[in-house]
Length: 266
Image (cartoon, rainbow, N blue to C red; front, side, top):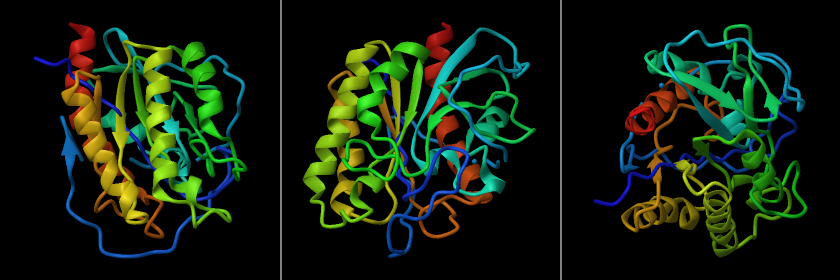
């Protein structure tokens, strides 16, 4: 049997650093489609405070067992675009999986007083590989982030901002290649990592439709990767999740990562 593979990917609009509010990168279209997942999937998250790039000591989540290092990697969809959702899906994911000691890792901090562990690697406006980018081009930084934090699971999303900010005529093939290279870079940097990919919003359908197919093909080839659909997630603006949307997303992610956590703890 091929090894279990997991990865999570999220896409958001243009924006600033993790503490700021990211603006939507695309124009609203369409009605959300039903949830789709590759491998294992799941459905539920909220948010408030500033952000810092300097890793510092953090409070324990006070959950039992060996800590599992999880990196939330992406743009404003992962970071939380509004102050009331500064925790993104991270707090709700802890609530969904109380039996596991999740240790969020990353060089950014973002969250409110309800979230003791604010570490993450998500930033409003971030691109996968576009230059120029409104914010960080993540590909160039990813190997360093992974090497420093040594995550066991990477919940990843991105690509929406590679189209925006004057590049809306970018062909899907360019962003598809960027995502392919990004995933390969993570596996090369830490071969034993599990990747959970969260899908795309209802824009740029060539890219959106490609993501689950690619993840499925990589999982079939034995890679530790899985897909979580973004379809039907409740948003403020058709792009960025609201409180209910992060709760939905955390629920979907929980279903995917639970069997991964069990493998890591076995």
